[in-house]
Picture 1 (tube, rainbow, N blue to C red):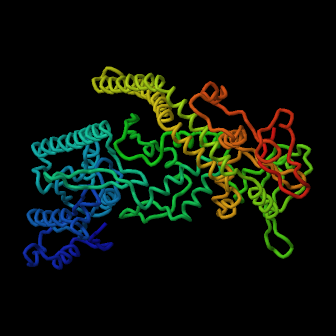
Picture 2 (picture 1 turned 120 degrees about the vertical axis):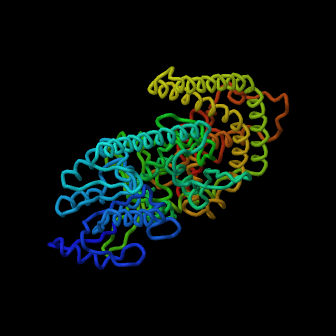
Length: 593
């Protein structure tokens, strides 16, 4: 706020002396005799107006000051103090410069308060009346540069009319802005500032019209995707993930008043719960299909919400230590092995795994195991197992035929789901149209939209699954066969983070027995590959091959496991046995009951 302060104790004579030093318009010195003290109030609504054209005060504030000086000269007054509001709305009286001005007139002799227009002072009649009454009680006459208002009956009538016009303009403008924002949301646009990971852009079309759109932020989009996929695993807390994102360089977008800064835990939570990232636009409680490019799919977003809800239910505990085997290792008692990093007498930290069940006093007596030893045992176990080239080829041939049959049988379901989706989309459109015709209230619209959106998400997810599951599964099982052909070499070359991913992709758990030998429980796709690898490799399946019932689509889960020697299918009598290959060699991949 720029002011011209009147020194404490300055009387009228001093005021006239001050007036001699203030140049009047035109560069001449005003005659101090008869000059009355006046103040001016200058305001612009936005920060952009206050700094337009790179000027300290933009263009509007200097123009208002010059007009106020001319008005003061016409009144035979001198402006002894000015109050400036650079970028503040007049919807409320809680404005710093306005309150300073009202406090000033209560303590100093002032004859006039000069404003450019009535709407500079207030945008509603109640605030205008209160401000005007406060000035009158202090003996101050309100003067407008552009409007003929004074203390006469006609001037007060004009004042009331102008205050009503200012209020109407403000309310009508707000209604029109909201109307335009709703229309933009209806067609999938983004009516508000795009969240982090996106950028609001302005371009000009061939006709010279400004086009406002949203584009993916190339610097932050991949980090936002990582935040969703990482949190969906359930292995991260909000605080640890926020620190990881800070390490990777994710910051908020800078603004003229705020520099870029790392995400807070609260900011990360807002990102993870924002449906905008999976393609939805929510405005005034109503959700629309967005035209912007989603950063994550609906399934991942819903999974993240499920993880957030489960952690909020029990209280989220930050993970103190991390290790690439954390979450994969289990004790023979069924409890997870957790990582610890105590210090020795020299103050150096060392890592070992302990049984979480023993901490809960479940009767387990397992001793702590050095992490380095477990790492070596698991690496050796990877190297001692694998598929031959012939076994891998047999797996690919059998499973490709299975998925071809399943894909061919899914056409009827796809047609039914498509019809259901079209019906729901038509119903949603009718609901929105009925709401804008005032046929249904907003709360009912929200309830029905939530119901339709939930059903559409399920149908869309299922259609996407039918469209991609079989081809993706075929490709995925081919990759698994390639990995299992030379798993040991691949695992040795992997970085710790990649080893974590590989372990969790191939196995549901890795059990460490009392002799520190690992027993691998394969994930369902891996178990299927291993079972087919040893179901017979002498003949290739043909069109007339009789596939087992679970391979022809009648059962969706492969209930086949791995034998205790190599990768042979496990018989019923061996399903509770563990590795016994030799006393010192790590056990192969096994199913643990």
